[in-house]
Length: 279
Image (cartoon, rainbow, N blue to C red):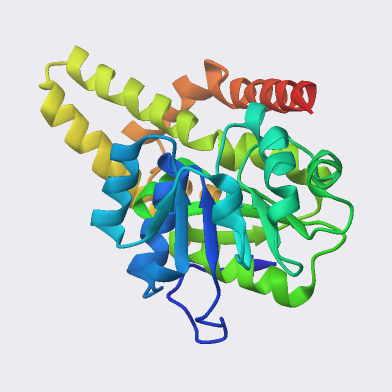
């Protein structure tokens, strides 16, 4: 099921209390998206160990902050745990005794399975496993979600609507999560690498780095928007700029003969293999 990005529809209870555990990049992106969509900052608590970072959140987003994770989740309806994968299980254990009876806990970390998360926080606690990507920093991310066995449809809808403030939301089954992580979670790095290579190629042929960067960056952004908004698939759009015997076809032939398609197949395989080794 696909949920588009949008401002709150009104179905979400505006009295919902939210805890964001971890005020790093992902935690800040989520907080910023919620505030920009009209959520009351006084209903959000963000945790961070550094006092100066907490002050930044308070002044920028007008939210409550604390350095105590257990205090933050007390009374919260939805808890987003935005810490690194190596710390996620320990964090779930830390907050388990302080959760409200009906709280749903959302893991924003890759690789850690629902079984491990539910085992750490308690067998009856509703847990949603979510996989964000870095474009959520500009509220154009891709969030993949998998609900645990204790999550109600209402709780899942609430989580989806909250996540929609920073991008698209796609619900899948957990057996597909590792592949989704390879495509969406790690995907921005692939696009950045391709863009970087295009910039270097332009510089090699005489463009300034500023000129090459503007050409490549804007082309990447526009092509991505066209992919999302057009009713045509990627192959069809590529055909549209590939005139028979033309310059683009010559470039595409070189890429295909260099094995670019196979390289992406192997890269995704390696990413999934590495993710599963962390499970």
